[in-house]
Image (cartoon, rainbow, N blue to C red):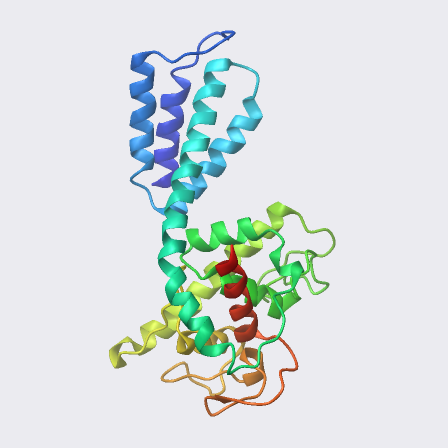
Amino acid sequence: MKKISLLFLFWLVFTLWVQTRAVYTPSATETQQLAAIKNTLNTVSNSDLLWYYQQFASLAQQVAGHDEKLDYFLQNLRDYSYSQFSSQKNIAKQSARAGNADFVNELKDKLLIDGEISNSCLGYYNMIDNLSFANDFPTALSMAMRWRESTCGFVLPKNGDGPFQIVTKDYGTGEMTTQIFSQTLQDFFDFSKNKIQRYNNANSADGLAISLAYTGASLVDLLRFSALYNGLSGSTVYGDIQPAQPKYFREWYSNSIWTGEVKKDWILSTYIKALQWELKQ
């Protein structure tokens, strides 16, 4: 359905194609046609809106300089789709600030968290943030999982499983590119959603569900997600699941109480550090 809609949008754009003009000014009819395309973009999901932006941006780059009118329409749609996406993302980010600040303040002293998030994890933040929003997933958790699985290195690990260590994938080894990194991110979101959906399907009758969103997550949801991602302590996905390796989630985890010196930044501490960094922006 998305591809069909996109073809329709491109058809409208290319029907406006004319000979190159030194300075292009759209007619009233053309302005109305452009507005109609924008109105269509206003009805799509955030995920589709980002996808449309990427297609318009790619086409604008490919045909740049060939025709002033075509350049105008593609660049206009590219900028509009990204502006709409960014606006929605910023609204969500602002609505989450108070809740995320409360989460950080409640836990940071109890968990003996020192220092700030590694600079390596801040690389490609905009890409991570955009895709996290498009998939309604906490950006801070995306960053924490990247740190836990590959210490945020921008390189393809030697085992071929990628920066999020998804064993069912084979990304090869060697050079990491932005295109490959973007794909590993989307694969991570799809992989995570499937695991969450499996848990929720098994436990919905008992009122248990994992709820992760771009605007945040609860401590219990983070803990259960880490269990699903890295392995369960038991042989079942039913009930109040726990991670097979508690330190995967938090150093010195025992019976819901955290004590002792922090030896490594695992998921929870990195998640909090990522939130702290985002709240300063």
